[in-house]
Image 1 (spheres, rainbow, N blue to C red):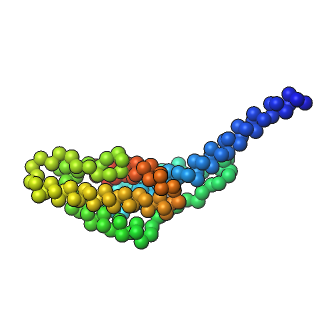
Image 2 (cartoon, helix red, strand yellow):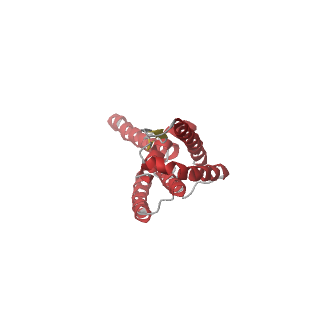
Image 3 (cartoon, one colour):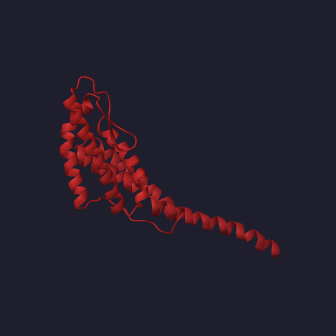
Length: 182
């Protein structure tokens, strides 16, 4: 009887840790939701079309597979899917960024602006630009990065993600921004 009691606690501890690990992943940082929201917001701002339906269908299949696996192994705390994230602040930021993108587009084409892996725009080679144009370009980049920082904070708030996780949100958005300027 003592041997049975000694060996029973190991599987119990393992199962308990597995359940808590699943809850932590699903509650504190829903990467799949952020990817979906990022794709939608970038598409709205940059006006991207081609291939979105195919990617959406693939994401739905992947999402269904992940949900099935998580439901089987981690039946605790399964968050609902979020299709859109919008509030007045996010809508206003999207409008400002959409208007600004028209001014920035020529600079992307010339390679003077680059999308960083951190979710923010950076200035590349500005050869051939005058001092006034460089100053205007810097002002555009500063305004864009300021709005992006606010956007990431608003997305975190809307998805109930801890504000300390905005760096992860920015990283996910970075991939979408980079795709939009190729």
